[in-house]
Length: 209
Image 1 (cartoon, rainbow, N blue to C red):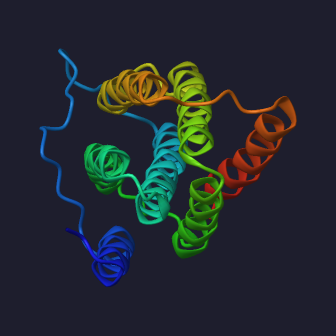
Image 2 (image 1 turned 180 degrees about the horizontal axis):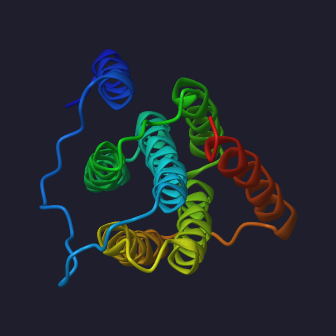
């Protein structure tokens, strides 16, 4: 049985690992069938910016799921969020690895993104299990759409980034479906709009910083 103190310690450990420790994937990094062609300097910069945005999305996913696991009184739902958080760790590791390969860095504002997403997760969790799961569904839908837009923007020759993004999009669809099956409620339109607006601020800023 997990005590409140245990839950707080787990949440703190997840935050420290997400922000300061090298992420470790449980699954191998997706790879394309062919080899990348040589990218120009501008193409590398674009790929790195997009992958940095995707990495920030995974930082936020860690925070969101951790906060939701912390607030729900339902052991089964807590296990659901904890499992999803672990699966998102693969994405965190893949995007970090690709950034390293491109000679770039993660967002300098990651602690801020984590704190914001953690706050949203706490709020969602306190509104009840159905609403909390509804946040997961809407978040994953927006992330999937965002990832697919990156497939249109990534350089044609950057097959490595494309393979990672494609697999991430597939996984996000699964997470949304799993949350729906677990009893997610449909969020009101204005809430979805606010989520899109907040995501726009995050993605625009993380593209550069």
